[in-house]
Image (cartoon, rainbow, N blue to C red; front, side, top):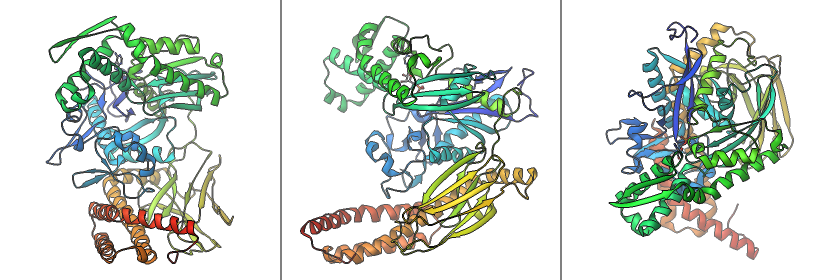
Length: 614
Ligand code: AMP
């Protein structure tokens, strides 16, 4: 804040870096961004880890991280990797997680099972955000209710919306979602000068992920020209290389290590300590299981050289996507703890043929930039331009009366966004599209802007039509909603003026309501989504039984019917976890039957015969 102390009257807007491994919160003090430290005044990083104790108590941060090895099933990490994703998206790397990700429906968003409860990545991220909010509040001695949160440049609409939802659930009004590379550039003051125009690269090597982003900055607007990276490459791989080196030195083979957990843990800790020490020293000496180990900087560098080379290959690809050459990049910003490794700095600098920006703490730079963006939004940096934004979210009603946001609040105007939907009943010919404005999860609490019917969809089985809904918000604030069925080409559109008949006060009330009711809204949404999922499954389950009688044994039919009935009963209760459990039980039982049915169909098709009525 301008006068050096925190102004209690004024709303503090914090900047939050919600990271895969660690998260941080920052704010402006004396016109400079600072990260909030823990109560010991030592650490600004909050590990992005959530632990559920047997007594259903929730621990976040270091306390949770300490239980990662001893109680992996109840300790959730890397939840950012799951934000806004369906099971299908993450099926390939389920083995990476120590906890249970549910495999119930490839299309729906992932859930995480802890004991008998089901959590979404949004709920888990909200725990981390709540911890950051509390930390900031105790540091500032004031309530914190507004934030800017950063996300990777490659996050899609679903992932950004999930991040907004997590903020809301944590009691935060998320004023803006900002790209991490943009925040990092802001922390170095890049893009703050008016009329500045340049291309920059942001090289972000963290614990588990690597991202390179190429940005073009013009008149205060940051445009992402290209992103590239590797979602499984980072400091953890450097640690692994050192672990293997120490194992060889100690003559221990990897199998023994798998059995001796405490020895494994000791080696891991020593390997990370060695790596960190070698960022400043030329030699590391330590002890593992009473025996001496040593590694030199040169040895370490030859171990990690191939990993660093992989990051440079990504840089090359990003440049080629952005249609730029290295000499057209004017600045390179280093982000992430692993950019402290001298070899990384040297090689990146050699690749781009110029020195890199590395004076700020690479762990903090994104949060610091988020605090600067927050300050700009608060109107404290008057000379910086603020783009026009939509004051409330715009979306449509989906099954069960849920609001599906298509253009999020605070998105810049003009804007265009769309999503695809399908029908839920066989042969459905018409689809009603009701457009709403507001932040609540149920449309009944939001403001209806209009509705229209897309008619003449040719009869098709449920789920087959592809209905594309586009929201086009022009510079004058007129919203055009266009619906088209992509297989047949039938289309319809309407124009709406969302700000007509609503004043600032009403908008503010709608916003405050959404934060006050975030918890209950979330519960209702969870329940309705679980019911929708169950209803789809009941529908397809009945169909499956009808079509596959020929290949199912009588007991299999009976058991499937019983589980379908259990699911039907579960949908009558107001508990989403009971529904999820019933879905999981049904899916576990029927998935081998479904595979058998598929094999039979394929075999029959190859013989040119038909086994069942379809
Ligand atoms: P981040 O995900 O950005 O917090 O990065 C964390 C990664 O940075 C971890 O792999 C750390 O081991 C690594 N790291 C932290 N400090 C150092 C250091 N001094 N030298 C090398 N790597 C470090």
